[in-house]
Image (cartoon, rainbow, N blue to C red; front, side, top):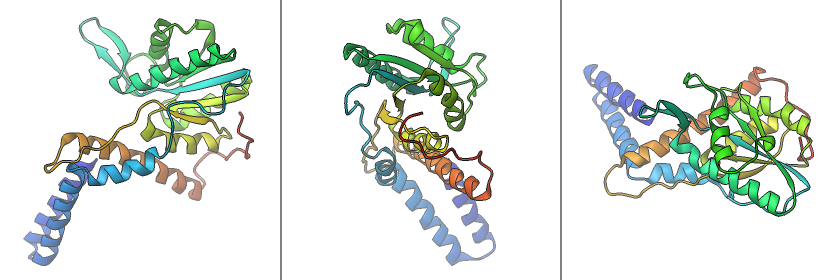
Length: 255
């Protein structure tokens, strides 16, 4: 996304130059350079991430209730061509580890805890993310009876929409939401739309790398951050236009 914007700025500068609008063309070139170095050297993604990731913690505060539910959002899958099998993506590992850790902490505290894995097959790999993550969670020691699988969702919005009835049926007293730190703000916004107010727990935390020269890592982080901001902005625009589903009533923090 960030490189697409850079390409558009360069194209605009060329068009303005062709039309002999030299001052405007130079201004766009300066803007493109600021965009390129501001992102690549770390300043822009560092600022964008600080607002997105905020103060979300990787641990649970306030202890455990008698009955809890951990909602784990998918982060994609990939096919291992060596064994011809689908596995959770690299970006899912932090989320999976956090969900497993929380589950064991819950049971060590004497609580009853379920893990709801939400994720369909938006990549078209032939199997839902939730089914693939389920196998990983089983290998990590979570009993099959404590796993709830939601396989229809193809977006964060649908994660929230399709998780709601499952959480209501489970009757959890407390709900935790596990996803990447960059993804939590948008996820909480969508879940709140459906009357769900889970405690956020980040599965990972990323930082920009400050450098004298542009780094690909910083462009990757900027792309991820822009994706989240676009999703947040789209939510508010759709609400204003009446395109979103009816918003659920304000809940008391439980499903």
